Image 1 (cartoon, rainbow, N blue to C red):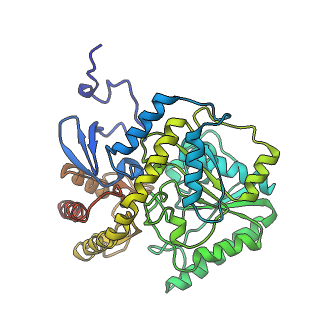
Image 2: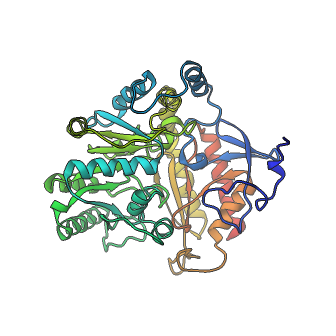
Image 3: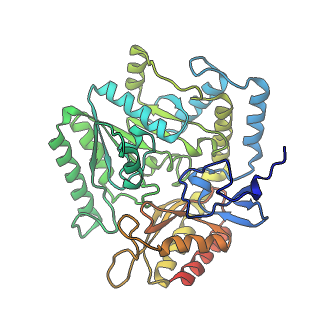
Length: 441
């Protein structure tokens, strides 16, 4: 049968993409190598969003492909209720690089499902129904993970016909356009932590199983917490006997300059969720890493849930190879070039009045746009109709050969290149972004 899918219009295609917008024309990629991808017209792009914040080792990594091929030639599938060496090898490798507090792994398939799994384990362990998460967060698009997501564009479609219980929100310690009246980072950390304590006490500590948080905000804007904030969150969790779950779906595997984002905050979580970069997105895989006492509880009571493709052996083989690649210079490359990245974006803020703020850590960065006279967004997609100049910047950058992502909400763009990106490529991408901003604003 003739494969003419590349020539079909979006309306004629049999495939409906995720995040589908009928007003926009999609793009088809056919090849990739390192930091670059190629579309079906042969145009090349610098992939400064790692497709979906996940191709951390870059495209076309032969070591990962070879590991997957070798596993396929040995045994292609093993039930997640059974054992297989690939699964054991990856569990051991993950525990070796995870925060010291964590000792055991249970696999899943996607980031949404990993967060669902962590919440299920936490609620059972704590014998409490509620999980707290931040407004301006993203934890997934299944019902449970979506209920934890503080982004209304995700939560509203899910809850249009049904909703879940036990989801409670608290305000994040945002450094830009903050909901707290704080003059210094230290005051912001104190105010945000005091607010979290108020929510805990108001809800009743005995009803709360866990606090679920990204250590560095992902698509909601690459926000880093002010110094001292996460130390206080850890103290509150200990004081009120609440588990701390860190969502490392985006921030894990070198994205923020260490194995996991929480390690850049120097605190120890109770559970950690992962996905995306664990295989460099070469195959779907996710999971939860947990403390020994939580693992003992799961083993003692049993766990009568599962997924057909949880811990798929080919994905696990990809994961072992990906971790080897990260250790073999890719994490070091992020540390060596992250200042170039930050400095280049800071220059954009100085040079363009429309750029209100730049922020982030490692290879996870955001550029916020706002009217310099009012400080308000040029267009707030949550309330405004019509064209959004931020999406025009994204389109302009793509037309000039650089892929960047839209934040939640799209008053900002997110940049998250593969960990193999060079200083020269960072400079080229920022130069293109600058010219795109100039063209739009």
